[in-house]
Image 1 (tube, rainbow, N blue to C red):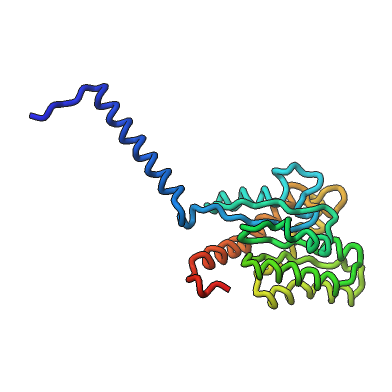
Image 2: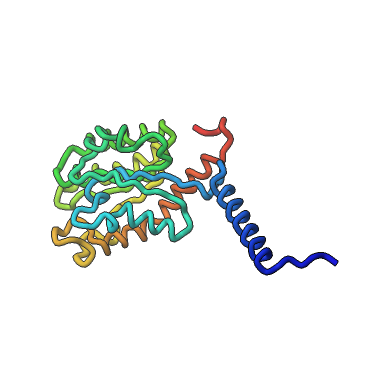
Length: 233
């Protein structure tokens, strides 16, 4: 008849088994090529709409987006590279260090200040073209967040500016979110007192609306990582 272990011995054995299983699980999670468990890096290259002036850092767009993605099961780090007052020229000038090596995806949210200052749409287009093109050449997947010119800028200006984003999305085969402030612009309850920048509730609305496009961006990154080496452009 086999010897029955004492209660303390049995308890120690159970603890050792549990510790072993926990250690094994941690090793599997940390193993290279863990796929969906790997933390993906998304940089938001933007202006004050990304930086969130007047908001706590936890209420700004990058932080709210990271939490929303985590709630949907995505292991993602969203990095805030928003600079208040930045134009497309400013974004291009800091591109190399604002979007560091190792970045897998970027949300480009620039152009609002160009339009507010009445800067030449052709120059804004050229800057955004270079930004998106440079990111794609580095293998970074891009979501281009569109902007619309103020309607008091005149019909010709509005037509030229608004056309920038869909044209560049087609040219570079990147995901387009047509208007970053969709559902928030001109809604007093969703903006700060300046009537321009979203408050925390406004950012939450932007996050909710753009989330499907960001998930599409993540899918592109995952598909690229899974593709055979020779098929990655």
